[in-house]
Length: 573
Image (cartoon, rainbow, N blue to C red; front, side, top):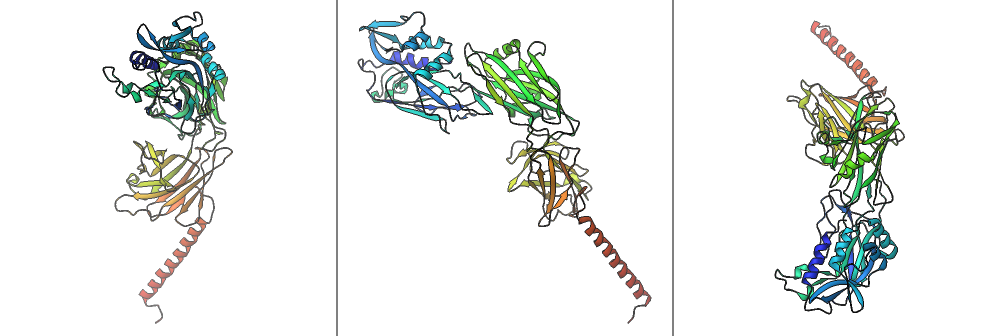
């Protein structure tokens, strides 16, 4: 059990306890306890007790809604034993002692003044060897007092506490779909008040007797969290939220879960992935299952996962299910592979799916492709169930054709959504996928069409996007005004229901939405500033242009005929 951090405190206490206060090691005043609860996947930082602010992992965030129980198990006093002032516990709780020293209750005890005392350093050593964290937690829940649930800042407090030896255990965790905090947090053994080692000099002298004891103690319990996720594995081998794929193409998904270190003598005894395919997607094959050090999404790549330990379908896991989903379960052999890791580990399942003609697309579809991980440990009675956020097979897109230039790649467009500039990752010549409205390394806000004029934008939501031409080929003029393409989705199916084009203040022109390429709206932009919808319906736009052409031709013919007559002198004076 990861309680070694307190041993140093107890040893220092025993060694440097105040010889000048043999009868009273601290003032007769109440103490307070502040618990800072946080979640983190980067490791087991924390677990200390002191009064000053403690650094926590960079990825830590407050855990709201956690309930801790505080259980007083004994008093603390100073006793002079063999001429040395020793920090001891007495009046110990029977249930606590039965769990701590089940066979020999006299172990480590000191009989004096008709009472039984236990050296705290020896209690700490015995505590470190106790493996039944669940039993300790149950005792704290039964005999202790529950603190108020942690607030939005992850903090909960208790005041008016008497001096003594306490057990602090987390006894309730909040329910969150994206995150599960293991109830097997290691219970903490602590004393109130605590020795302030900063007041003791290098030679053992007490520099400030008034500041020797800390009565207002802060505790940072170690955080163990589970988190699952599901992404599309893009063509460059990195995970993404959306990637345009044509009907009939194969999509590679990756579903994963992190498994933090449980500490000494604890194991995972259950790990199951249930994956459900949305309509139109059919499961083809699980290409690889690997385990290794836990990776954040920004660190994950196919090249790294290829170096991880590959689990065998013959011995390490079983798969059941059919065309529209599957269940993958780690066997005892596979669980042994996971439990062999000393620190945080992850399981990564990579599989291929066929995108059929009925596949739901976009970001509003209710029938989304989901993963659900169920993970259990031999330290906790209940399984942790984690549902990954929904992942869709494809998001919306806009195909723009830039005409009128000899080399369209000289042009540049900027796209905005409302007042925000949209940034993109380049996935090919003239092809871009949305990365968000915040600039990141490698993201672009200036998009260039391919030399043939095609500009393909993918990963769009149902929203309005304004295109502004900011550069064009030398010798040509920029488009006179921006234009806006509005995409509207069907909330029931997630498909792109319609798209409209608007040029400055003019009326909207409906666009035809592609039915065979996953919700794509197409627009043509000429260098002369004309913007036309490709495959647009009959909305009067073409008729108006035809009338203008006919009227202009008639007027030009009349002018030429008049000029011909003047040249012959046929015009009346």
